[in-house]
Length: 304
Image (cartoon, rainbow, N blue to C red; front, side, top):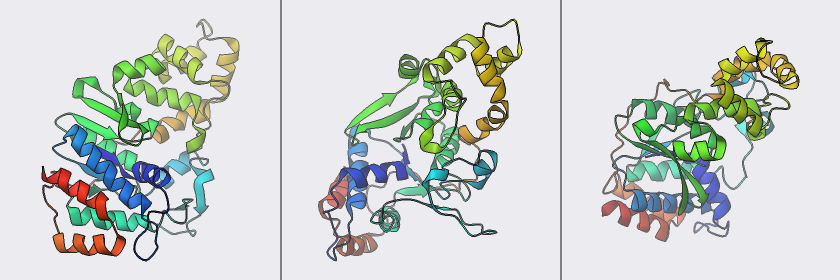
């Protein structure tokens, strides 16, 4: 089981009241909500291995170089010129201080964390999925990862509809039913229709339904562009014009949209711990941040 950790702690933050606080009054709603999420996931799905995948760079420069609008609307503060550090993401003031606490608690529990400099959690998930020798469940609220779905390899997306108690189990049948595509086809669909939440412009005038019809007719993005170049094809004049005008975007967008699968992610011991890796540290964190019942529920679930 691979967790898109930021996606889940964002959901926890907005799903658990900010009145959930540490003894000193600091909100810990994201921390406690995430611990409850993990407990529920382990209880319901019984993974042998679990990795919390992290965003070491939520807006990699190599993606921005290709499409400058990529996640631009979410930048709170740009990194100084010449700096190797990432831009700062605009996130709620009371969430950002909770992220280091989440990392410390996961480490003290012995739950593996993985990330790679210059890459998003999506790319870490793509790489660990490519390395996996057995089935993989990916837990994320980000539809971009639908592109990794592969029935043959047993790769599914568990997409939270309400908390993590109600998950949409996303396999190829569901993708075909909802979007008319398979896993790899979803990346082409997303590229064509665009995604305002990621600052991807898409091809103007090509929405989700039109994109799905074009993919059904011509197979993939390369097939669609070949049809646009072919005067004898059945691409409508309006679609042809839009596709050809968008050629510069279409040429670079696949590298931005497609999840990387060859990222230098360090090897981690993903075995789900039955007991904490550092009990004393965990006890101190529990007292400092008032983790209470959420931590106890997770420990109980891990110990079963």
